[in-house]
Length: 112
Image (cartoon, rainbow, N blue to C red; front, side, top):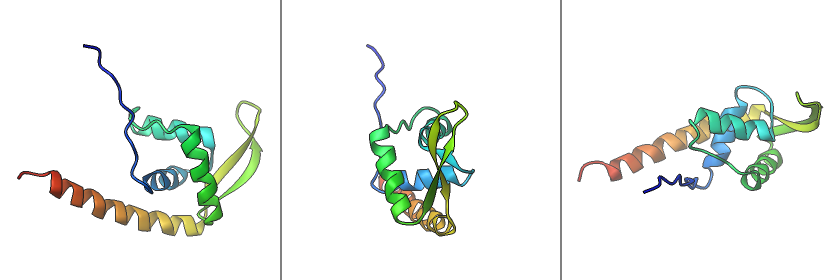
């Protein structure tokens, strides 16, 4: 029987947390954020551009990230995103929420 790899669905808001956390390491263009998420999750989290870019635009509208156009390592024009001070504060809030949520899920999934 062939082993199939299923793409996990992210809880609403989780992608925002992951993007904010990735940008904590420094400015990055959208494709680079997706690559970083994939690599840091050991190939488990594969975020397609159809989910990533709307999330980045939403975070930009909320003031949690800002963006500037630059030339990438591949000599192409790319929009680079960076975490704002407000985004850093929001990251702390989102991490706290995630800790509470993951602990609650672990309790539900724990021994009966």
